[in-house]
Image (cartoon, rainbow, N blue to C red; front, side, top):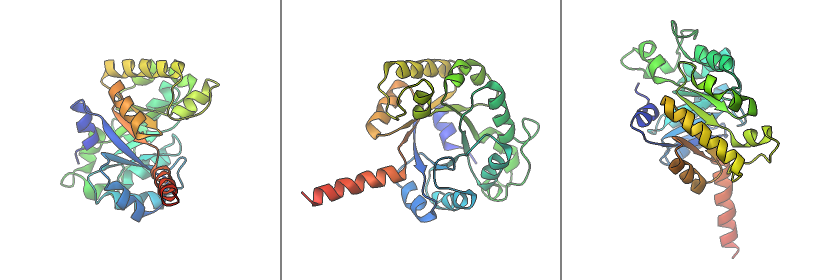
Length: 252
């Protein structure tokens, strides 16, 4: 049950992450074969519920991509369910304090490291020779989202919480919280300065920094800047952009 994303990070490599808003196994299956290192089901802002998350995992499973989830909130019920469904990484929105980060770790880990309930109804079938419970704590990625002024003010305490594998920056909410325009591919020097601070603090602790991007070109820039996980829009955005370009070309 080795987590390929975790292995890539250990080797100092960056991973490119896909993002699923559409609640459909077929689109997840086709999309996940595009070469993504990981694919994340978005249960916060995507049109996803628990059953569609499971269906998307079944589609992703046919590719080498590591299945992950952005849960809708930091609470044990949904975190436990997506892990039982087979998530190899949990991205959690709006983690603003060390206490909230500590709670997320607890929800993701089996005892004695955490309080996750035993019952990996789907995940257990894909564990290492029936040893899912023995390896899950080491292999599942715990990734709080850093997307507010409060989180930035508390960043060192958050990063010092044992069990945090990475952080995931939400640029729109981060900009919003500082009174700036919410957008993905930020050029504002102030926000870029925050990125530099986050990269420095994560790097010194051996923690990966992730970022949501609007375009592939910006994502490539951010990999060169030091981010170890970059997402490019989502499948809806990429599909619509490709469709618009096709229609425009056909119409001349």
